[in-house]
Amino acid sequence: MSEIEFLPKRNQIKIDIKVLSVNEAWQGRRYKTDKYRAYQKHLTLLLPKIVVPPGKLKLILEFGMSNMASDIDNPIKMFLDILQKKYWFNDRDIWELEAKKFKIEKGKEYVKFEFISINNK
Image (cartoon, rainbow, N blue to C red; front, side, top):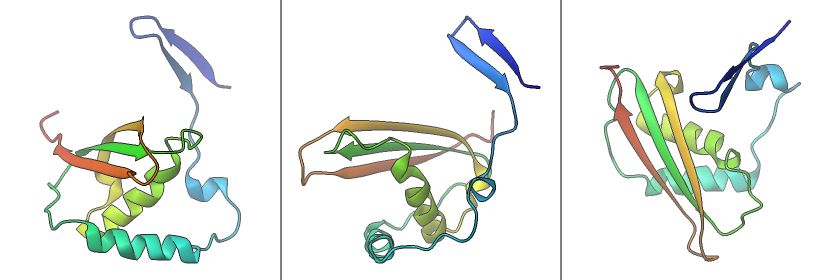
């Protein structure tokens, strides 16, 4: 049985339950659409050459979105998978994730990202 703990210091709620992985949540194989493959190819070409620090990482993401009906978590997995392929790191090394979205004008959509080493923590 799961336990729920209220942490009043920061208005946090802690629930003792094992989270599902994406693989556990979906049956069968999911296939990339042609639109996703084109996005992956285009984004990979646009990403600059950088070196991701080794060890534990914090990834900061900022999405400029023109459609505020879009959930903040929708682009994260795809973008993270593309970063992982481009920069040859394992996403299991991401220990902290910060994501923000901002409403912007249609046609001016963007994504910003930054890797921060947290090996000292």
